[in-house]
Every structure is written in structure tokens, then in C-alpha cells.
Length: 608
Ligand code: ARG
Image (tube, rainbow, N blue to C red; front, side, top):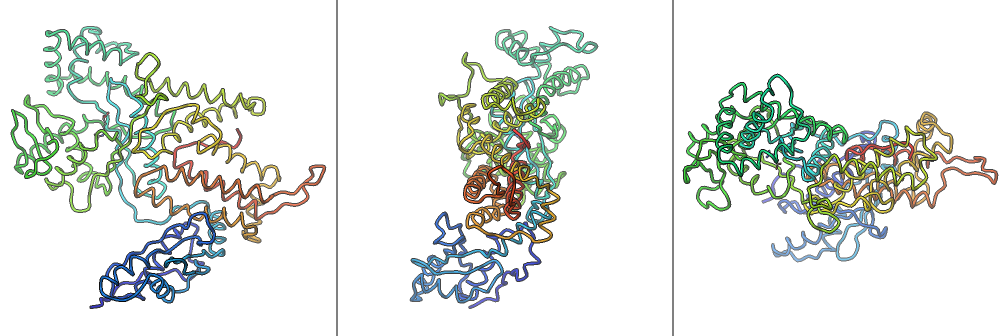
């Protein structure tokens, strides 16, 4: 029985296309249409479009649907082979302004050659209107990231979460989504009992005089030591927790004071790295924890277990670890606050996507939160927790990242070292002699923070990665330094030609951009893929694809620049000829690179 299927609408008029068109999506539509016409009886035939790789013999993209379709037909006793299928698809492919030509090759591949006019149109749009995001349905997205714990150190794991979470927020904001960036601070819990008890002893007048806790971590260590060694102190610490949770004003002010000291420390890191986020820690959910516990009790989801109240994601199988929703002393846990948080994010924030950027070690915790929230009807149907896990940071010895003396590394010291190393590198290259002190400082910061961010983002986040200043400050290979240099070089081309942006844009209006040399076309095709990369990354939240793309752009640019001069000079060095369309390609390349770096949270400089 052949069903009346909805065919995708195809783009027929180039003028309706903007610079943000995702070519691969349009190709998918075209081939969905073609395959639907060639094989109307096949239900959901596979539409496989891939990039062809480096050999121009295979076209720019390929449609690889013929092989699986031939299998499907054989299963229905239709005698055929992939090549025949490929030819049938080709015969039904509607003409499109995007496609120059299609060839059937090998075992049944359809090699697709992209039309140059489309590419020229897209590049002209980028030059005229900037690098616009592909259009999309706007969503409310909650991104939970960074999330260090008060009084404890903010360690390299939190640094990863901060860098990845910021970049995820940036890409979603770029696409026009309504993003809520949340810092789920560990600011509520039993550790505050011992901190307050210790504060009462050391700074009894803390309510009138702000105590100089310059080193909150040392303070935390002291109180922990007492807690472990002194029974009397331990009792008092527990009593403090009870007072705090009962909102006794003295205890609340002690708690606030401690939180404030921590928050100022965290803020210094955020300021340096240019990170924006809203502090909404576990304490925010106090009342909401009561409410969610009641909901779970009333729903009959909680089971008693040695005095605790637990909840299973699957009450029949009971595998994995259940949530501890209420402790035997009546207190709440990390699990309770995450249940309250997901409920708040669904019901009050009205989120469409719930993203958590947390180390991979917590993945089971979030799988269980998702399962329990679903069981209790808090998460419905397609709503889900998106766990963005990441591996641990290793030292160059491939062991857990530590200082020489075996202490954990302080983030502020790490950033400080980054600044020092980046300046060394710039001086080593003699840049201090060329740049003004202001330019040098800008370059130093861009390189230091850029290299730390890029080293993190350019690795597949699920893997552990080795932290090495030497590697990240290398000016060869896929590093921030290499890219920042490449970009300044591109930016300097127009400067050398003494062509202002206005002059260039005037030329764009007059003649428009046109491809010449083969290397220009190669670079142009890479630039064309920007929307595709952005859409992919905003779905799977793997930022290393964007980094690989940046590297691909700069490699294609290098090849172009080696083969094509943009400015011709005579023996005296006087400019005799300017090839405007090549300067336009430089400008478009720089813009796509800048936008990509911006999404990665990396500042660019015009000189370095
Ligand atoms: N504070 C936690 C930690 O340091 C991370 C919190 C992540 N977010 C959450 N909603 N549980 O491990």
C-alpha cells in the first residue's frame, strides 16, 4: 500500500537563500524527494549524505543511499543492484540551484558537485550581512555548568565544566535560543556545620566584623581536621547544621559570610575567563526540596531502607544505585536537590532542554535523576536530561594533575602561569619589539586564556586530556596560538594592500565575489559548511568538531594563500595590482574564523 507522503519543499530560487543556509540539509531534502519519487513504496528509506573527503574525483558530497535501499528491495524480493538503484534515484532527482551535477560511481555512489553560483551567493551574503546563524525554532535552554562547592577548592574539573558550559551556552545563544546559565553551587549541606562551628571559635564577633578569611580552603581544612579528631566539636558541628536548616538568623549570617568569601574567589576566575553565569546553588532549592519530597512520598515512589527514604529509577529491576531522597536523620542530599532542581527547571523555568556539564564520574547520578524524574511525571515524553560529561585532566606524566609537591593545583595559580608562559612565548618571538605595550598585553591575555580554553575544547570531551602548556602554546598544529596567528595574518593582508573594509564592501556591491583559482573554490567550499557544523555541534554538544573545522579553514586558507597572490607588487615593493575577489575571500574567511572563535569563548586580536 503506498501512502501519500509529504515531500520536502525544495529551494528553487537562489534569491530566497541567505548566507546561513545549511547545504547538507538541503541535499538531504533533495534526495528525500528523489528517493521518495523513485521508491514510493519504501517506508522511511535511509537518506545518507556525507562529505566526500579530499579526493575531488568523488565530488563534494555523496549520497550513499543506494546500497541500503538495494538491500531493502532484495528483502522484498525485488531483483536489483545498488548501481541500478543509484541510477533510478538520479533520474528522479529534481534540478536544484545547489547542484552542479551528479555522477553515479563505483558500487552505486552518487557523487554530488556543488554549484559555484550558490557558493558565491553565500559568500556575498557573509560579506554584506555578516556570519548569520542558520534559522531555527527558539527554545528555552537551561545550562548547568561550572558549579564548584563553597569553601572547597574550585579545581581543574570545574575549570573544564566552566569552559565547556560557557561554549555550549554561546553556541545556543548565537542560534537565538533563550539560555539560562546556572551555577549550581554546592552551597548547602553538612559541611557548613563544621565551618560555622569553627567560625564561632575563631572569629566570635563575625557578625559585626568581617573576619579576614583570606584562605577559605585552609579554613576548611582546619575545621575538617577538628571535625575528624574532636568528638565534642563534631557534636557541635551537627547541632550547627540543625540550627542552620531551621534558619536561625545567626547561623544564616555565618553561612552567608562563608559563601560570600567563596563567591568572590570564584568570581575572580570568571572575570579573567570572561564567563557569565547566574549563581543559583543548592540552597535555592530548600523549600522546593520539601515540596518535591512530599510529591514523591504522596506518589508512593519512596521506599524505606535502613531508615533512609530511597527512590529507584526502575522499581522492578532495582539495578544500579537508588537516589537517597531523605537521610535517616531527616536531612536532604545532593540527590534531593537535583530532583528539586529538575522540577523547578521544567515547571517554573519552562525549559525545553536541560543540559548538565559535569564530570563523567557523575553520569550514573544523572541517569538516575532522569529515570526518577520521568517515573514521577516531572519529565514528560521527549523532555530529557542531557548529560554533557567530560574526562579528567591529567598532568604530563599522564597521572592526575597535581603540583610537583603533590598538592592539587589552584586555578588562579594555573591562570597566572598561563599568563607568564604566554608572555615568554611572545617575547621569544620578538613580538615585544613590534607591539605597543597595550597590544602586547592584549595578545598575552588572548593567548593565555585562549590556549587553555582551546586545549580543553579541541579534545573529544569524554576523553581524559593531558594539560601541557608547552603543547597548547605551540604555534604549529591545532592550537589556539596557531589559529590566532593565522587570523592576524589574514587580517594583515588587506592592511598591506591598504584597502579599507568600506572600500572592499563597495567592490562587493559593484562586482560581487566570484571564484577564480581552484584553491579559492576549495577554501570557499569549506566556508560554506559553517551552518552545518554549527547545527551539528548545537545538537550533540561536542565542541571539538568546531575546533577541527577551524583548523580545516586555516589549512585551506594556507593552501589558497600559497597558490594565489592577493596583492601584486613590483621590484620596488610598490603595489601594482590588487585582486579584490581574493581580498573578499580573505575577509569572509576571517569572519567565519572570528565567529567560530567567539563561540569557543576565545578573544581575538588584530595584532600579535
Ligand atoms: N557541585 C558539584 C561538584 O562539584 C557539581 C554540580 C553539578 N550540577 C548538578 N546539578 N548536580 O561535583
